[in-house]
Length: 194
Image (tube, rainbow, N blue to C red; front, top):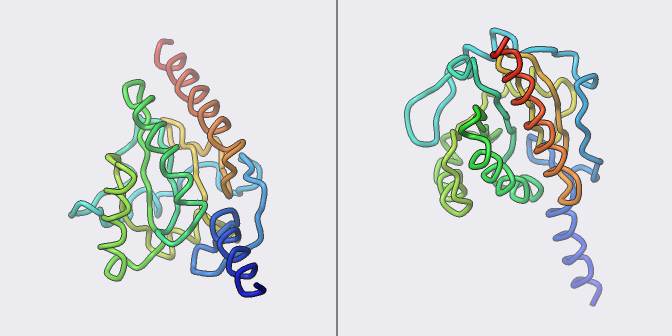
């Protein structure tokens, strides 16, 4: 009986808890859209111009997405909250692709060791947007001492970081992300019309 309770508790922590980017589980934190929590106000050139491996083959750069509103999602295949968040990102991409949203999911895992798992993940969740791997130095630059995943950054068309979401809550994160994305697209539409 004790083993069963411990097993169930471990499963709950895996799916509800927040994961460390490098393989350790952390206690649950409330996901917070917090641009002030990050010292970064925009993506640095070292992040924008690094060659990222794509899960579909080849490489890409974040600088290729200039002019779009971008959601950059740092995750891993073994992270329970990340698995809950991905379907929401798929919905956001489908809903807001036409007005200019691009979702990019970057796994924090080793690309050679996780290639098969990442491709399976894409198939299971019906991911059509860009998926790749983030080098450790780029992940550390973005995370700035907040090493837990998932982390999602909402980037304006001009490269400014508008929001940073750390963790995932089924109850609040999807609505917060949708609202922030709508606002980013609306703000940028107004700028483009002027």
